[in-house]
Amino acid sequence: MTPVRTIAFSPDGLALVSGGVGGLLNIWSLRDGSVLQTVVAGSGAIQSTGWIPDIGVAVCSNRSKVIH
Image (tube, rainbow, N blue to C red; front, side, top):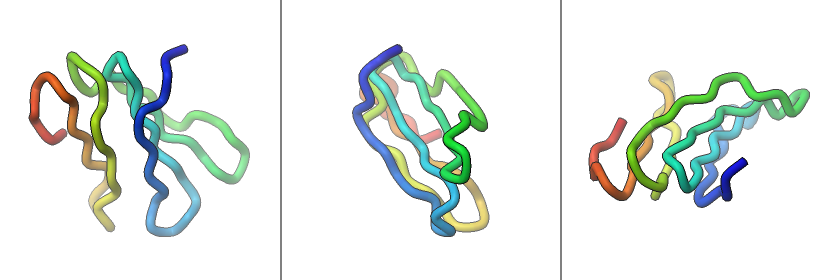
């Protein structure tokens, strides 16, 4: 478990993305609270997350400064 630094709701309100300290990204179902996907998105803390309609999730970590 790592602390959550950022969250963003999907445009349809059915999912949530959370970004943590260790570069951990979780996509959650808001229907049942389950984790749909877990990804290590960077080498440092996730600084921001956002949903891009019809595409997916955008993530930026503090060390790489790359948007995934």
